[in-house]
Image (cartoon, rainbow, N blue to C red; front, side):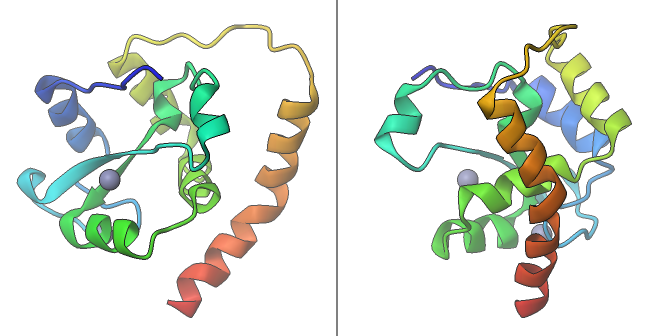
Length: 134
Ligand SMILES: [Zn+2]
Ligand SMILES: [Zn+2]
């Protein structure tokens, strides 16, 4: 699998873009206290598949504490993806701009997309429950 690299320069831009906010606890931190967590598929099969071309879907910006927790628990990947989905549209767009990525204008419908739409509708609620349960 290809390794997703983010230069220091881009990391700095991302931290500014996210206003120094951790995507999990939603608190503000100085840039050195924030880390870019790269999302890695959980199964060997998923890891063998080509990763999403959208760089926006491949990382989370977290504070040191949340990042450590995420690896220790560990937080299931579908919940990590929920955090990505919860990003406001303009933010997603700006992230893609930082990486110079332009999404394909036409996405053919398929099973995968349907599954994703389904998750969009239903799993944000489970994320809230997860968070509330602490
Ligand atoms: Zn945090
Ligand atoms: Zn990490």
